[in-house]
Length: 522
Image 1 (tube, rainbow, N blue to C red):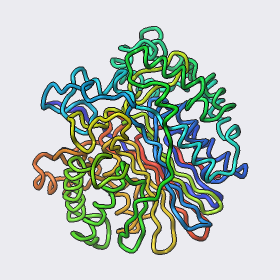
Image 2: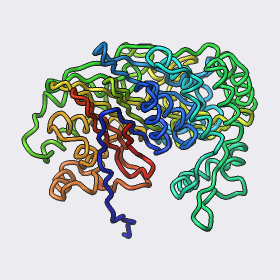
Image 3: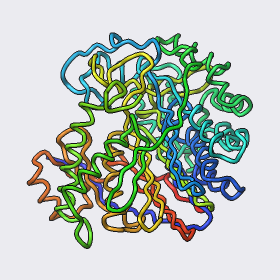
Image 4: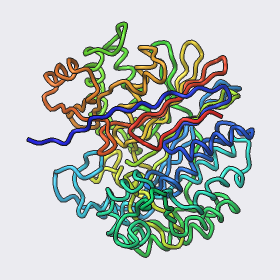
C-alpha cells in the first residue's frame, strides 16, 4: 500500500541569554515579549504581552475567546503560584443539548461517545465561557510591574495590521476550510472569496484583517478586562452568540472569575515539580512521575528500550485513570489547538503559560460585532450524564493543558509546556525525564525522539527514534505506529522549554515542526 512519507529533518538551535528569554509558537510574539524585558518589564509582563499578541497572529490557536493556565516562579519568594482561567460551561448548559448517537468516539474529543451533529465539537453549543482576559489581567495585577495599557499595546498594533499570511497560515486556514465555511462570519473572514488567502504572486505577504478584532482590542486597552466581563464588549459578544443558538449569556461573563491557586507539587529524582492543578493534566503528570520513579531508573547514556517501554506503560495507565476518575465533579479534583510560551527574566522569575481556544479555530463561531473567535470548550466535557466531568451549568471541564515548572537539585529552574491537545501531557512527561533523568541540555531534550500515548491503546513512535527501538516497541505493542514529527498532521506535542541557571544565564528551546516558533533573548 502506498504511504505518503516525509524525508526531512530540521533543528532549531537552543538560544542563550543572561537578561531573560521568551519562547513562543510565533516569532512576532517572542519579539514582543523580549522587547518588554528589554524595557524593564518582568517575566509576567512579557508573558502577558506575548500571549495577547499570539491571539492576533495565530488566532486559530488561542485568543481572548479562550482560556488558559499560568504557573509563575517568583525568585524573590522562591515560590510557585498558579493562575487559573480555564473555560467554563455556560450557566444554562444542559446535557440534553448533547444527545449521544453511538458508541464510536467523537472527533477531537477525549474519545467520548459521538454526539449528534458533533454539537460539542463545533458550532454554537460547543462554545464555553472564555476566561482569558480575566486570567491574564489577574496575573498582571498580582505579579506584574507594568500597566495594562502598555502591556496590551503591541497586540493592538498586530490586531490592526492583521494576520501575516505566509505558506503556513495558508495551510492552517486551508486545512480548516470545510469547517469554516459552515458559519457566516468565519467564512466571510477566512474564505472571503470562497478560497483561503495566499501569498502574493511575487512572494510578498498579505495581511488578513480579523473583522472587528482591532477595535475590540482598542476598547479593551482603554477599559481593561471589564470591557468583556460586564461591559459593552461582553454584551455584544453574548448577543451574537445567543443569536446563533449558544447558551452563553452576558450573565456568564459578569459571573466569571479567574482564580489564584497553589500548584500541584511532587518530588522526582531529587527535583521538585510544580504544575497547574485541579482540572489540568498536572495531577496526571504528578501521578505518572511517581509511577515512573517506582518502576524504572535511568541508565547512563541516552534513553533505551527499557526507558521507552517504561514511558509507554506509565502513559497507558495514566490515561486510563484520568478519563475515568477526574473532573470537577469528582472526589479527587477540586472545584487542540493550543499554544504555549515560556519566559524568564533577569531577576530569576520564570513563567510557563498555556492558552487555547481548543480545536483549530475553536467553535468556528466568530462574533461579527467584536471579531472574537470563540473556543469550543464544551468538547472537554463527557457527554454522558452523571460523571465527574459531565455537562453541568457553570462547571469547569477537565483539560489537557500542562504548564510546568521544575526546580532541580542544583537550583536551576525549568519552565516547560507544549501545545497539541492530548499530546501535551505525554510530551511534557518525557521532556522532564530527559532533563532530569538524563541531565540533557535543552537543545538535546527538545530534539530527542519521543513516543505518544493519548487516551487509547495506540502507541505512536517518532520516526526519528532508533530503528532497533522502534522494532522492539512494535513487537511489544502490536497496535503501535511510526509517524514523522511533520508539519501536518501533528502526532506529537510541540514543546517550549526554558532553563534558568542560578548564575543568571538561561537557555531556551522550541521544537519543530512549527515554522513560526522562536526563542528570543532579551
